[in-house]
Image 1 (cartoon, rainbow, N blue to C red):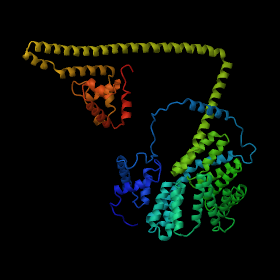
Image 2 (image 1 turned 90 degrees about the vertical axis):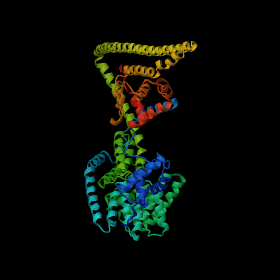
Image 3 (image 1 turned 30 degrees about the vertical axis):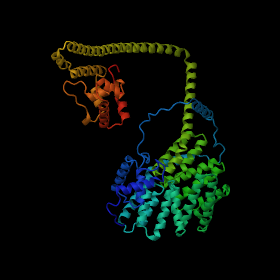
Image 4 (image 1 turned 135 degrees about the vertical axis):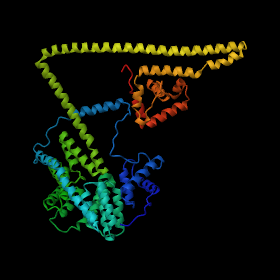
Length: 615
């Protein structure tokens, strides 16, 4: 592997290339780790030091406005809460109620599996047993991966070993498969590079990155590389995936082009009675709408010896889809279950079988089973970690969950109604006596609670009156003092007693008056919130907590936030009360909130929870 210059991948290089990569994705699609691997594909070293460089550079770029704050997603964290409120619109509420009533009405259904040639309960039992054995199967796969990993570490030409690791990961974990493709490309010879690029195209298709996969396949086609069997298989799948996603006229054009490539593909498969031979023709029938012939050919493919368990799962899943198109849901579910069991045995998480099982069970009214299997399908998609699969499964989950919840609510209501009727019929007289006694007990308890609340309110009102009286008396005293000073100034000025006039400022000590007023404000606040200092310090880290000087009840910071707790929130009003400048109030607030390590919204919410004495 060629040595790289130590400082080649600087912050400016990372930001420049990150902006270019992000321009190809919608905001919130790519993670930081995904960006790291994209930069690795552009030549950056894949190690923890360079990953930290990417984190630091993109963080600075977001603060500098080069990259948006919503450019990345974070799948390892979730919102703790959502404080946004939405206005209730009457028409929408009525529509929701109508839909709910319709769901209740639809809860009555017949058993759709009745008179079907295949009864699926036994198949589901087999699937459940396979799911229970999944941890031990995955443990064996991990052992195999570990042995390949150690073999690659000592191999002087590890391309083939890296490819084996890629093949183990390609349907097991999306991100790790990309890593080993990168290693393959680094170790590939000129003849092996096309093979590595095909592997990258397959992984991009699995992750829904159809444009990137098409770019690779188109480049290979334009370079006139060797048209291998894998090339036509991947290109055909890409076109048909695009057809399914696009729909309409564009989807039909993609489908026709896929059919053309599939016909070329069949020229490379000449051996009859092999799984690949019959499967390629069955898929062609599927895309042409010849479902019955496709079922026959798919059955022949399934009876042939499979090259791997995973390939058998693909054929079984295709056969299930063909049966579903002919409205034979029992047979479709049978083969989807067979495909899912094969996926579990091969530790394949890039799969659609479990999702389709959940959808068929939902259509049959088996909402609880459908919810169970769709959740397992989502867990598998999250393990594989390709957003494309997670999105496709997420489209089905809310529908299944809503129906299941509606049915559970209906069953709860029915059970409650039936229980009430039975109780009324059996113990009508006894219930009357019990209800009367219970009402008397409730009334007696409620009366005690009301009396206690009245006493608390009376005490609170008394204290409020005393506090109000204290404030009014303080205000009156302050006004009288000012009036006395004014009168003394007027009299001495009128009598030309200049020496006495000069002594008035010394007597009128404004600082002493301000201190007295602050002390009275502190006394009032601590009367209402006795533990305000301790509760406020609990909002701050240990080293940032406020320590009062000897003789102080509150200091400036505590006084400001105490007024906010009382409901005085405007900086101008706080500054007026405490005789501070508006900038001083703002600076105190900003400094304290910043030292708390909390957001302003979280800090103020916690502040308002400080309890008064009546609580």
